[in-house]
Image: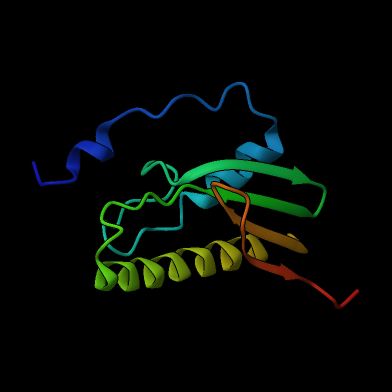
Length: 118
């Protein structure tokens, strides 16, 4: 067993109680991988919250800081965060959403995309 294999095997709850449109978004977000661990963001526990309203989706992510005093670590973490947020927007755009907002756990908007074509 590798260092992070236990995360792949750990059950993370059930989707039974969720509305079908939310389940579908969660399914799509399983295609977004953390570039450091190669685990999907749902199983890794980065998905903190989700709201789906017609063609609009709002995603909240939990990015825990493990070493706040390390400036180099913060730079790496910001690059990883940007990659994950960009991948979320691309996956959900392909799914047909026309408005996508990604927030951190305290509600700070990390990135937003809106289809302005009509």
